[in-house]
Figure 1 (cartoon, helix red, strand yellow):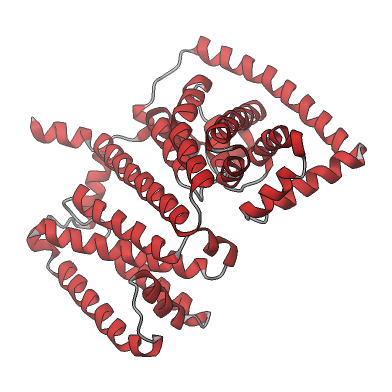
Figure 2: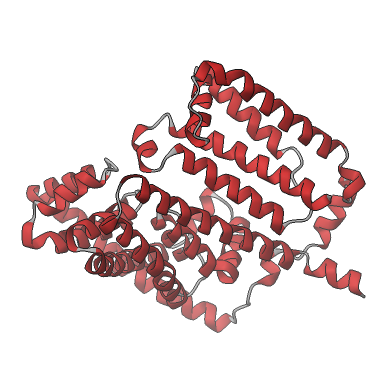
Length: 395
């Protein structure tokens, strides 16, 4: 019974998240065109089901109600209540008029809420519900992430600082040269501005036309475009990957996309590593950066894999983030290569052979697969942090 209750609660929570994200997508037509609203709903229903299977207890007991309230308030204040009905029609292939669907929709939502209210109200009968004092005691017994990290000797720290000083000098010189060329050469500035404007439109057709306009130099321009996208444009790289597949075929398109993305990721990592983490620590906190450090050291490969599989996550942020931590370059580089290879092949195949709904379905399935990996990492982090408690109970 507890497993069934947990499954229903997480499934309905996933459904609520799907509705909320779908509603947000209706504000941006370009993003809405990339992946259907129905797929968003299905992805997060699947995500909720997987959470219900992976976890046998309900942790955040008011999460469903918070997300549902946020969705309804957003719809009310923006005048998009009927958009929720249209999302329902698209997601569940309902052909009746929207006005006739309002009452059945309200009844279903009310039933789901009543079931979840009952689940939360009777939570203590099926799982241990901790008081604030007990939760505080458990928190104190948890192993902190910083306690899981590998310690470096003073010699290793000094050597690392020396290397990073040299890297910083080289990086600053290269950045200065690049800025001088950009502002001093009008043709370079014009071409770069045009390139950024092209990929910022988030339209594969426009990117394909842009690359084809360079004729025999299309592959070179695509390579440079991927690197530029990595360094300075927080835009999903799969736009260029799909375009490469459409122009060069999915095999050679995959080779071009993978190699250029690897170079772009390495450049981002190097820039972050060279320029240092001081400014980041001032903007956040040293303790926060230490936690990020440990997370990348222990789960970095899985994190990189997830972000590369998710089509709407800019992988550049992960590359910069990894560079700001103590993660080793070759660990990052190998994980990047392995993590992005299957995704690049899939997206290239999708871009080169599939169109329309089939293309969106493929991207949706890849997102669902990536979210399943998120659950695995969540469980791993939870188990690692509670290892001390489990060992104490075993004794």
